[in-house]
Length: 130
Image (tube, rainbow, N blue to C red; front, top):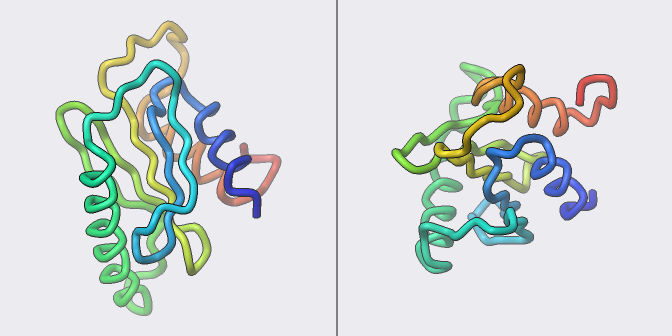
């Protein structure tokens, strides 16, 4: 799988996508994509630490999958950003940071739920959905 191409599709999916990262299941960064003109709120070290914590939480969720099904995504909402985590197979995770301050000029575009659904469609690899 071409991780860079996948992150490009995700970044192109909506103007509110600020940053996207693929990690292994321990939270180690494999590749990243960043929207031009956007400044990160966290330092590289803070980002890495946050990703490791999120990956650990994802592992804990996975332990319940036999009872509640496989996880589709997890959302962490903050005042300045929303971070959505998606599994990518059994070995990787995708972290997508959504901004909360972009003014929509495309009035018919959806909100956070539609962005998440679109990313899920991209991850499904079904060309009729993305």
